[in-house]
Length: 203
Figure 1 (cartoon, rainbow, N blue to C red):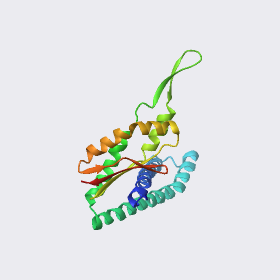
Figure 2 (figure 1 turned 120 degrees about the horizontal axis):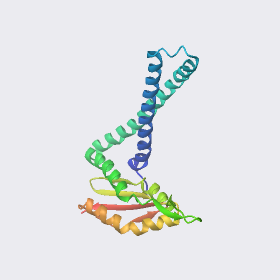
Figure 3 (figure 1 turned 135 degrees about the vertical axis):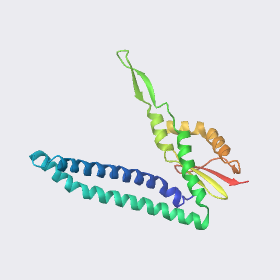
């Protein structure tokens, strides 16, 4: 089974979008700091003059990075959106994005922290490494809704213990997605390499 363009680009687009927003906020912050230095006539002080020179040097690069990541993300979104309009349904594209985020929330295990008894009988809280790996894995899942089929793609966790957690949840996952898409019939999940595929065909 091969991933389509939507499945290949969803996570990179999400990462690029978040990074672009971060760069935009950083750029805005740098501009505001530079404006404050000018407005309060602080540039006459050596330290502020040096700081403003560094801001002037950094700001154009941050601005270019914001534009570059934003353009790449928007281009991929536009390409997939146009493809769906011509060959499929734009509504299914938007629904795929929404349902992907919903399923990620459903799969996420909130019990990431567990108590641990130390040698001096003190109880401390530490991160459960199994659930941490599991959550990292399911946070990459993608739901792709088409007119004739619904595909749920999960990346298998890299550790055997985290895979056991996913294995125990397979029936729950199938029941959840079958309940969300009652017009589709879902067969048993199919493992291909490090990916788990749930495929539903229209009844």
